Length: 322
Image (cartoon, rainbow, N blue to C red):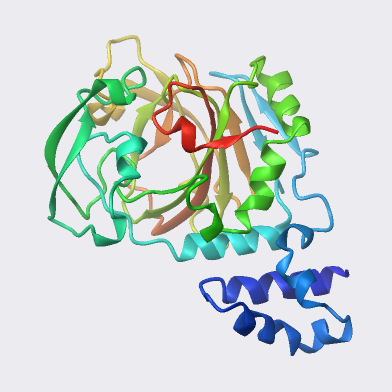
């Protein structure tokens, strides 16, 4: 299969990904002149795992940083045509809604997220204090919270988590998940971060951040062994929309990460929000990162992927390693 044909397959599928009628989707491909010439069969078209002919992940362009903690920046991380299909998923996410409380993923997953509206009051279990050491369901209490349109210090309440229960709604993500759970990539992570990942599972999330979205400095919860962010910038978002790296001033900071003050931190680096860039690190006590206020992005798209341990609230629904 030529690259041109592979590209047409991707784009045809991406443009019609919400259709429930395979015949309609296939008809578009069947009568595409480029595909017809190459005798693409229906079975080939439906077998989405075989669409990627070249290597999906590129580990050649590695830039290792060691201050203030070790993190890796990978450029041209994914097959660019494949990334375009993921951008379609991101483009079709619902507008992000927020709360002022921290809610474990386990309880977020039980929400009817399509029905959430601004100013709506819902009853849900929240963390008593939202911080790196208090994100399990064991430390949660039920309370009434308000749905907000304006960004708060947290990620959205209607976040799009991909797990074993809804992966069939995002079939092309199966290709990426397969690659990220293979021995080759696991060894790449273990060798760079001196971590054993054999008992972890893969947590996958699609993120679409609205205008004024920000994140106060945090280290990621202790249940996350590895964090991988993949920037998808095919819509010309500002380069300063990438992750900011901080050091903590020599003072105590608020234990609740939703109440922290940016003035207690010093920004020492910022990862450019370049399309197809991956940022990888292993969360620890000094892995302070976030997203400054007053940035000018209005449609920031990325994938957040984590290798999580058994204590993570939705561990049982995450993807097993191969």
